[in-house]
Image (cartoon, rainbow, N blue to C red; front, top):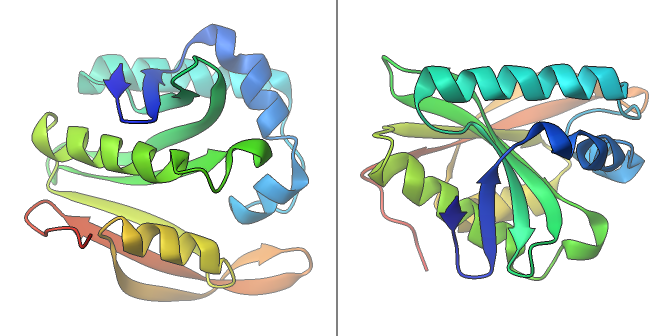
Length: 178
């Protein structure tokens, strides 16, 4: 478990499938998490969980976390994907359920996983992507010490329209701005 100041991040478990499926069935969350459709099936969520558990064994640390408030209530997820052992990098993505946003949980979760990735798991680089229209995510990653690195034009088709994807990155040696 990774302990933050207002959240804990614990490794995903098989018993989390129902909660994850419920979160991914939120159209607003899925719109801003890069998908314009409702959740995939519960069986598909269970398959993802098995993959994340397998990746945890392969990399020696979790790659999918449930974000919990200090009360123990699950409120969202943080995922490391495209993990590259040789390059010591990964892409991260996260979300919080609707009632848990704007309370500092996301900021603490991001700081906590970045600290673990750089200080404990020997990562050199972390990347995050989001839609150009998602200004909230831009501010979130920038405040977390990530820099805008590029734009993938017309890279995502959501809600009947093309949107650019912005790529943010953070290198281990870079200091965060308070």
